Amino acid sequence: MLPPHARGPLLMVAATASFTAMIGLVKHARGWGFDTLELMGWRSLAAIPLLLLVSRAWRVSRPGLLALRCAFGFAAMFCYYSATRGLGVGEVSILAKLQPLLVALLAPVLLGAGERPGRSTWMAMGLGLLGTVAIALPSTGDTPVRAASVVAGLGSAVFSTLAHTTLRALGKEDANAVVFWFQLSIGAGALAALAVTGAPLTTPTASTLPWLVAIGLTALAGQSLMTRAYASDTAPRVAAAGYVGPLLGFALDVAAFGQTPEPASLLGAGFILGAGFWLLR
Image 1 (cartoon, rainbow, N blue to C red):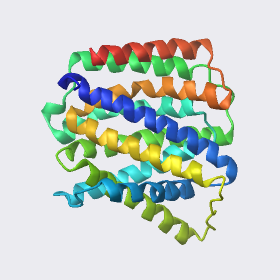
Image 2 (image 1 turned 30 degrees about the vertical axis):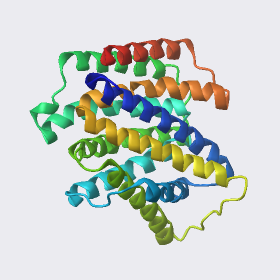
Image 3 (image 1 turned 30 degrees about the horizontal axis):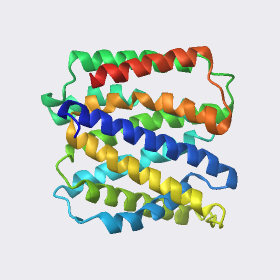
Image 4 (image 1 turned 60 degrees about the vertical axis):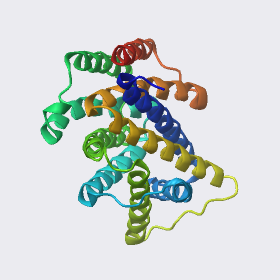
């Protein structure tokens, strides 16, 4: 049994690990010709059958707030997946780390003074931000694809901030119900967008289907863990625990894509680890 002060941040660390694995799978799947909307659609279709097995509650008491969470989440996911076109997993995670600071600033305005971060949380987030800056310094030359990916990554941070803040407001709702409706909205929205644009749907093959299922399962695990994390603690503390994301992302870049981080990146990883341990303590 986790102590109350550690439960929310530790659940968010586990969610971040799941999302890091997911984005690595997404980057790999792009090599087979799947575009962003297709990956979003297949991801949700793979996760929904499992949700149908484990969910016992389908109703929520605040459907309007849930609809906002789904809309912001859809936009954040589209930008997040788009950013993988020109950036590594670690770099995408770096840009996502603007989100905890935005959550800390926005949550007290939207959710009340009880969400105001304490001094130690601000210090942990500041240390984590130094780490993300250090990792960002060795970035190489700019290209149009890379520049567009950076803009997409920044957009993901903004929309993710709004999605996570509404998720905190939904904290008393059944987690499985919230995750189910989110997955359903992602799948329906992606397929509807493809139908409107008239783009042909890339059909999975026997070799690509397991990877698409893995994207769906890691996404489902991340969503479920994140929903429970925000139900367990204040939004700023939970969001700050996500600073382990860049560290996990660069580890995946090394292991799966052969991209070795530069010394400044390792220094930044040390800052991020320090921020995480400080927050949990």
